[in-house]
Image (cartoon, rainbow, N blue to C red; front, side, top):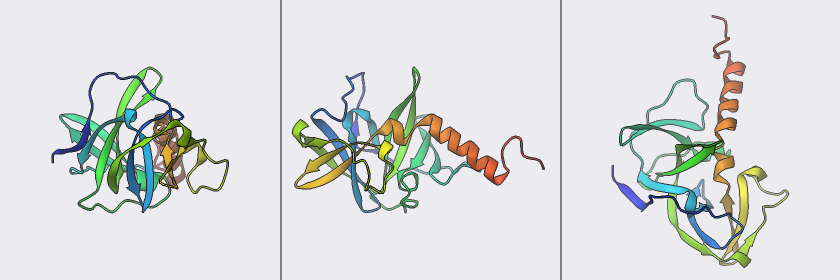
Length: 183
């Protein structure tokens, strides 16, 4: 399957969500979300995803991206909205998350990529203290676009490698499938 909308190369300065900038808007479970365009490496059509046994529901599996194995997180399941049903519009947003000095490529399965939003600094608000169905540590900011708010996700929090690993270990312990499990 071919590449879609965005492909970026080279090191560019990172931009915090409280600065004016561009954001990739996408849908997950009929909710409009966004992330800094600086976090996006590439957007691809949904290729064959190989399910990895005994992984949490939000880890959809892995894909082969030009010879590299890339884990794919189902953003709907990760955000508590249920697994994404694959359609013609479903795609994978490839991002790089950081664990210490190392960067790791991860894919986020979304229902649909919408567009790129230019949100001025004065239209960026801090995340709410309460009232959102998404964990507040997953929210970098709120962007006001056409008199409506768009949740700007904190990619490093949503796709935290440490948390994903810890949650996976907890689910293994809970089901008795960890390496310490007795036969």
